[in-house]
Image 1 (tube, rainbow, N blue to C red):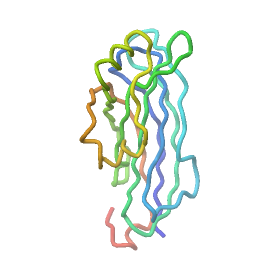
Image 2: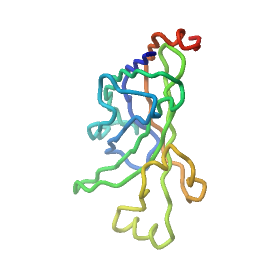
Image 3: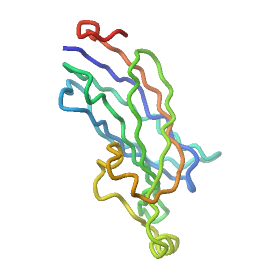
Image 4: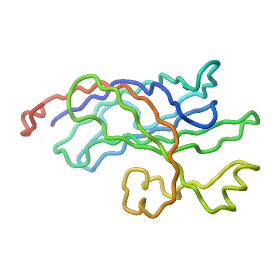
Length: 175
């Protein structure tokens, strides 16, 4: 079987309305992929930047997959959350990006977005907090019904990933 190693970290996030951010992340693959080692989901710590607007997490990612085909290449999906002074958490953005398909070191900026909701929900969000969230997180990376959503652009999450591919040449894939 061909093997894929993903080794790197989630550097941090920038461009969001407030600081005090954390990130929930996960990896989605097709049925032909099997996780051999590592965690396919996780969460960073909350970072409150003292200077600037970049929240630094340096959260490690270390995954080892085996596959018999390229269908369902891994995608990294992210949720960026804001934690206020009272410990309440508010969703600030969803995002996803494909894991690079070439070996080597890659720096990726994953842009994020969030659902808007009605004007009543937006008004309530300003005073109470919270806000609309997706019922099914599969919409983050599937895109089937995503075109119907009313969204707004949020910040971006920086990732640094090292990709190691093994035995892909035996399955007709040149690296």
